[in-house]
Length: 301
Figure 1 (cartoon, one colour):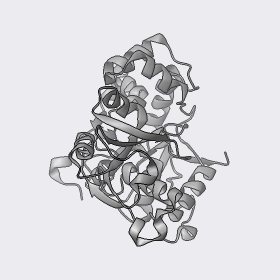
Figure 2 (tube, helix red, strand yellow):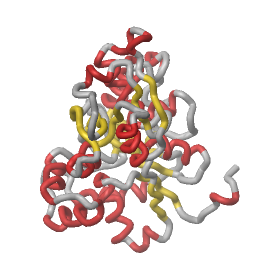
Figure 3 (tube, rainbow, N blue to C red):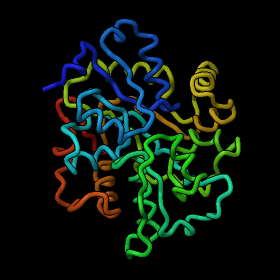
Figure 4 (cartoon, rainbow, N blue to C red):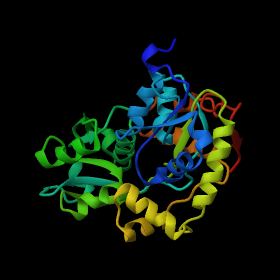
């Protein structure tokens, strides 16, 4: 049963207010009819915040990270399923530390505290993947301790006040804070199969069809964007023109958002199992356990 405080005549869509959300924001700004029954709800703390919001029904659909969403389904954190794909290119993750840090490389972070926004968030999942890649999951003395900091700002503060050694966040979102000298990048990393997904239990084909139109206007291919869209992201997210253009070179969107790759699902579940995020990854039923096939089409791509 939905609490009275969350009752609404609108479909509430959670999203992270970052540059990837530009086609979604433009859709609601330009389609007045759709805006009558769609409400965008910013979730600046990311996927972990949206999983909680889905569980308490304060949002009905979320645009969030594949790994975290799948982990949430398998771990029973919410009654939701995937319904489509929002971005087809991997995110460019960075390992971030303080302005006057003693940590100069990833190996220096062995056994140190890593900041995360929330349990189950992308910042935690990707830090777990990094720990796996570095071989830190094999012994207790090298294990990574996660410290919850809730917001992006709190994470930046934590690496400067010493309560955490580092945290992981999307590279271009963080770059202005490196440029200003507030934080430093140890390294940028782009783990495979990290792409935002759309999820929700109800049928949302109308919304997805409309989103397809907005994405196609924005541009689906790497680097192919209009001057107007460069300016839109500059002004909306306070980014420099050269950074926006550089980001656009590495991001692509799907032509059909209701399609989900079987290969992506299988690789993501395998990686989550290897990183220790989920147990018994070989027992996950793909796609039935993860995808609402009444809305989404699972492809062999």
